[in-house]
Amino acid sequence: MKKLLIYFFLLMPVLVGAQQKFVHTKGQQIYTPEGKPFLMKGTNLGNWLLPEGYMFKFDKVNAPWMIEQVLLELIGPSANTRFWKQYLDSYITEADIRLLKEMGSNSVRLPFDYRLFTNESYLGANDSTRGFYYMDQVVNWCKKYQLYLLLDMHGAPGGQTGDNIDNSYGYPFLYTDSGCQAQTINIWKRIANRYKNETIILGYDLLNEPIAHFFDQDQLNPLLEPLYRKIVGGIREVDKNHLIFLEGAQWASKFHIFSKPFDDKLVYSFHKYWTDTTQEVIQEYVDFRSRYNVPIYVGETGENNDAWILSFRKLLEKNNIGWHYWPYKKMESTSCVVSFPKPVTWDSLVAYTKTVRVSHEDIRKARPKNMQAIQQALSDFLNFMQNQYYSKNSAYITGIGLRIQQ
Image (cartoon, rainbow, N blue to C red; front, top):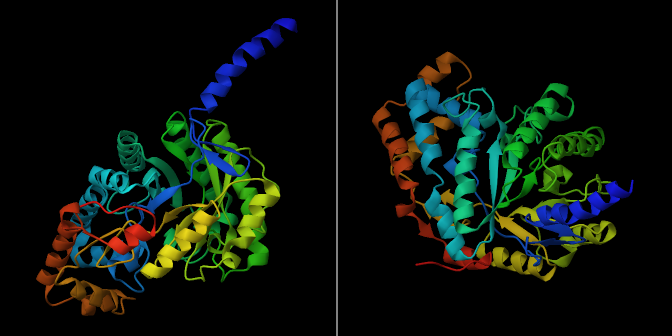
């Protein structure tokens, strides 16, 4: 026994030293590996590994599978595959990470769809290694420019939200489907195992905006935290160091579903859009932080005018709450860090998405007579979304606490 105690005390500094290489928590604060308080300040790389229709100027065609269906109808399978390959290879590049670092960001949140880690058909391919290919790139860029990275499962198996943002089919089947839960745990465990030694990674945001408000909250809300426990259990089998981010129910807004923290490296995340920018709006989260002595953070906010952007950021700073504003990049918009031009013929593509396409006959009738305009729109889109065409939204950039780079 005496020898075992001596061995334990000799080993303890090594274990503590290993933990301190990672961003970590103590009480209500997040700390850098050097022990300095860390307030997250950055943006979301939205619309890349999980495209969203509204950022394409589409209305009802709003989930990735719906966008891809439109392209399959218009240009066919091979051209669809080529489009998405170029899109994924070019939408976010090293230049974007460098720019965000130069602007003063200290971190970035990376939304992704689980299908990138499976053989399910998604954005023109069915390769289970694609997720790691793109994620590895971002990890390496973030290491190069010293920008911390938060991994966010934006779309989980079966759907965790039940709306377009999780690329699901209209209901959050994740909470009642044991197969989907097992797949979710397995994917997170694979991700954690691959990146368990990557200190540039802040942690894992397990489920984005779980359980939309229009479902039976009494039935689904009690299922969320038990699922979180299962996912964390899988992750901790291979990775005991990274932070775990838990979002509240109803679009990451409701914390009452949480009980006492069950892991010593939890950060609780809420999202806020289109609210007032007063203390009352965030007080319940501040109270939760005090009650359980844990860090809180805003994973998404924004999509508003410049005055709102600035006012809400100042409110967060006043309350020592870090943030990742949404999103980094959009087409023809000022509510983002950078934007790019809309192709001249883009509205012809938008018009097609608004047609009735229930049957094959509908699809044939809706097919545009001027397919050259469609082809040109897609080609220009892939060209314009690259960084040489960016315009920087100065008021938005300064509003979220970054600085403008010429």
